[in-house]
Image (cartoon, rainbow, N blue to C red):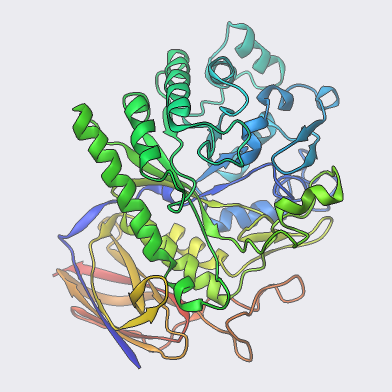
Length: 512
């Protein structure tokens, strides 16, 4: 059995848990919108066409902010196509995913859906094929109270009150050659700077996100952030990060250590942003928006549901695209990625798991059929529910394992929070060990443990293996169950994590 000793101290914290850390992402891609969140005629749809079965799961997931409408889609999107009477909206070719976009669902529908879901909106603008003028006009349409052409047009289209969208992305992945309107760092930096200025002329209260690198493996990573922030530092509040992980050729050890790359990515961008701050003698800090992250099996060009191959089938409406089926291993990795984000919550203020429904998503749905939770739903939902208050600065002494990509890596990964208002400590564990359980001791300095309020684990189900998934026929095959044998007395917590598992323990504590 492997072992880990965790030490936490009431007085050693990183900062307040950012509620926007538990965000998600809705893109006009595949079946995320159409037959995902929106399906008129479905037995569970309301009068707006919003699937209430999906909406119920979204609320249970606990997503706090939703990025919309893309993603690669936004770099060729005219926001005006999604307003006004639906019968008058144009059908367009979407070059990003080689589909026909009907525009039956647009800005107004997303605002109405978000109100039902109780989520904040993070709106992305097109800086691929469009620019400054369209950027300022969508802000006027969305946020100006009235008395101008665009704000009155919003009222005419059914929303007299402003949408009051505060959080905006200045484009998407413009560092990527695959992106419609791909730009150099200088080209993008200057455009983002001017778009930001024009948007703030309309609404000074906006929070703006500049595009960072699409991954830490991009050849321009680091230099891109330095150049873009040199142009935009005074105009923006955040710089973005995107990262996807998968198991390559059976190298499960490296896959389970993916959060090591997340840590590196985050810390490198912080260092670059702070270097630009120092060189420019700026006073404020630029924070991070990790607004795309997840496990994504990019299987190759010969797989039918991969976006690269959608073109082979011709122009279609909302085809099935990257509808990955997530297993136990994926859930453990997602838990460690969430841990990384939480541990860096002093600077990572926004994070959006991509995407919400059907497309590499925690929720799956069938057209005219049911909706259910994937394995990765569970770590996200519990952390969104319980990670509140202050982020604890943990000391971790864990046995390690060796993997090809990241070398020696902790077998036990953990993050935690302390909510003084409720007197609760929440700890989120992952055991990366494939075969051995892990004996864990937690020293609770400054706390006196009163009782274990919750102890749950996601592990390989009985009779299953690490590839076990949830399906339409077995929607509850993998989920959370009680973690037995957790003991908390005084200043110590003891538990055993099963092999390849994710777990949460919530304690009621008093100050020692």
